Amino acid sequence: MPGAGLVEGRTALVTGAARGIGLAIARILSEHGARVVLTDQDAALAAEAAEGLGGGAAVSSLGCDVTDEDAVTAAVGHAVERFGTLDIMVNNAGITRDATMRKMTLADFEAVVDVHLKGTWLGVRAAAEAMRPAGSGSIVNISSLSGKSGNFGQTNYSAAKAGIIGLTKAAAKELAPRGVRVNAVQPGLIRTAMTAAMPADVFAAKEADIPMRRAGEPHEVAGAVLFLACDLSSYMTGTVLEVGGGRLI
Ligand code: NDP
Image 1 (cartoon, rainbow, N blue to C red):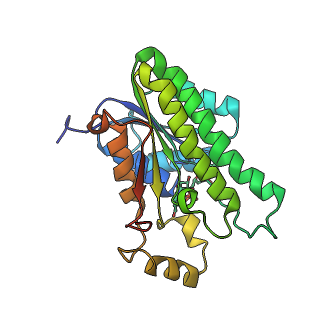
Image 2: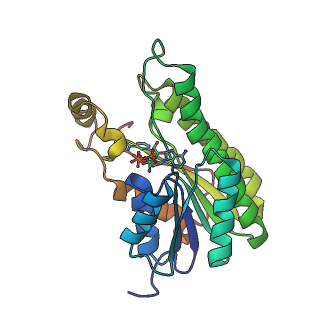
């Protein structure tokens, strides 16, 4: 029904939106009436993804490496310039460089911490600058259950994803008086290119360990993000929603 979207007329920016969970988030926000800026480190892939959402005046795309301070500031500036406000910011971009600590290099550690933790911090900070004057806004950070339980072979990723939770809570305290909410989502095993890189037997063993006995789909994470982005969650800030099929209960 036109005009009945949960985020009708709001402006959203999603990082790492060219595919996977980020693209599903961009899609559901767009379906619910938001004007969406899709960013990814590959500008051409972000543009292709925006086209896939129907293009048009309410969708825009931009290349943005989330580890680049100027690029993140420019992406937020683009959203405000193009659509007038920034109401929703989703810090989603991510990478993995899995290895046990005996094999993990410092470069593997730093790359993952840079994209997830520094990238999210830069995104939260830039979005907050745009949202503070408006006195409203919702920031959603994508963490992972790996940041709660700690995954074998993911000392870098688990550390960064746990760090995102601390960052979310601290930022929520700073921004609550300004009307800006900051929350996080911790997905479990979700079917995307990131998890397609896992050996099939490892993926199957992980699925078998999930009470719901299946991996999740990107749109199932996107639903939780939409909830945190819209006014249905108007009294929630600093919270963490698990989307994991019951994995850690
Ligand atoms: P994908 O690898 O499918 O998509 C991630 C996107 O982020 C890619 O387009 C990637 O581009 C982009 N990206 C990577 N680095 C940067 C960067 N520096 N700046 C901007 N964009 C970048 O991953 P998912 O969709 O699976 O993951 C999305 C988020 O969800 C991540 O934060 C991930 O950690 C988290 N998550 C995923 C889970 C899963 O099971 N899939 C579980 C828990 C959390 P490129 O292709 O060029 O690398």
